[in-house]
Length: 145
Image (cartoon, rainbow, N blue to C red; front, side, top):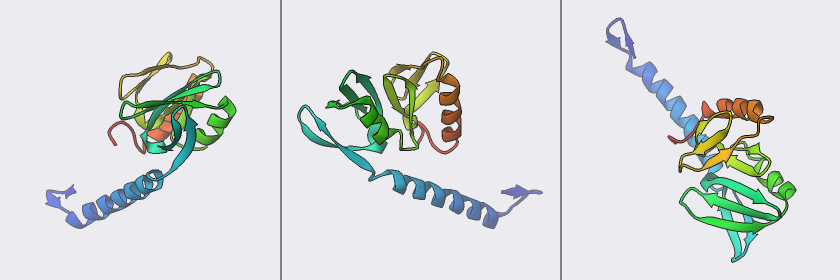
């Protein structure tokens, strides 16, 4: 830090160390958390940090990963919500979608645009809640992870 033309290295190092420690603790808490789900091809381990979003259509849930892969899972909306919405990084902007906020690039009244360019609709009735949760969450992480 510069104070009156002097560089106070000690305080800057302390602040940087505190911020880095907090970031490492949060990342360690996210990485390794997963759920196992039955897909058409068998059991798949889904790490929460790698899921970009999911689309629910009847009893078929399509899970899109950040690496471009996707899987179809069979289950109910209630089961999926119970698993994913209990994680602080997931929100439900529309009755048919659940999105990982780590991958939101843009949010407006009509849609969420993910880092990969997917466009997910936002319900008019849910917009204010989604916006508040996203803003609160954004100060901790986001596309630039």
